[in-house]
Length: 182
Image 1 (tube, one colour):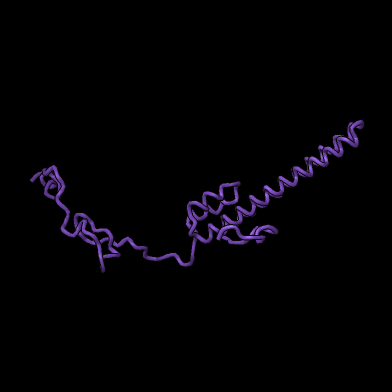
Image 2 (cartoon, one colour):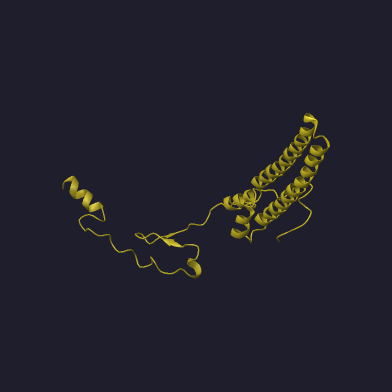
């Protein structure tokens, strides 16, 4: 017997052009005792157990949960977590914090624009003849804008870091003011 004939005898597909039919237990619905064995090998018919052998102890956030929690602090992207994973309590906590941060940012921007208008008009009208003093209003309003921007960015960074670590701690000063979503 030559080498080719030996290989054909050992190979179940040799010379047939088709695969053999799978065993009778393959493809049937699984009920009762077969629940853990959701897959049978198509050629041997042996049940394959795909359950985790050593389950992870303690809750660990999934990648989606972590991503939705991080996105909650970036502008209006809290809508992604609100619409995609509403049943998850951890995501809803961070979505709530993101909504509070968005409301705080809007209120800060609105009040700051009124204050800046008062400062610029006050300095512009009072010191219109003196060049350097009229520019002071612009400098003060710019400094206020920069301070507000730094405050909002620091809240975003704090929230993103806590979400990435899986912590459910409210943002400092504003995080525990009220609850928007449950």
